[in-house]
Length: 274
Image 1 (spheres, rainbow, N blue to C red):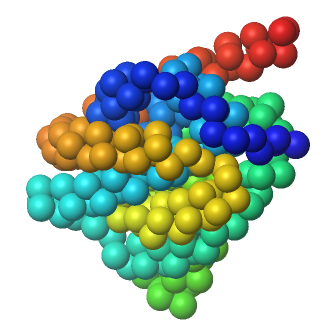
Image 2: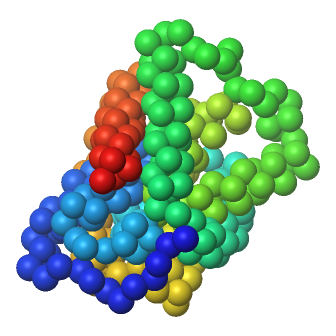
């Protein structure tokens, strides 16, 4: 079980944490969220917070990433899939309330293992597809069902609930799950999925932040620093993502996810040895 302790953040680290926010913002804007895969290991390095507080602080940072990113995609000419996004937003908002409560009951080892699993699966799918050997021949859900609102809205809401609970607990921004889910399940274009994911997780991040702060699984100080510094980086990353070819974007997304999975795996092995 996670032990909730007083805020033990190290002083004098605002500058590196601010830089982390800026770089994480670029990542979030580029891949439609998911800045937490950089925020989480970086906060583990530059602060003395427990793993639960690190994930909660990353949730606060995602407010800046999602607001700035969604605005950048809209103003930059990117398309948003509001049909699928509507259900994802509703489910994701509810999940944002559930997730932090689940986090308070999880062990730190479990949190790391779950993060690695999602990173590896996401990276494998995107890299294989980008190399021209798709694992699946198109979307899992037939186009006729995607076009049916009686199927799409309830299904998207359930998917959003699961992803939202994950994002609310882990503070990952949800892009690592939402973007592949939209592409695989509903056949959404990768660029459209990235922008829609950012829009989806605005209310999720806000709700998750409130719950995390109330139960003590977040640092308002570091979360705010990350959120503020991530915003300009997110705008830059969003415009870069819109300019890249979908194949290139998939390679970037997949390579980044695999690198973060390797980093977390090494950290987990070292932790168990100690």
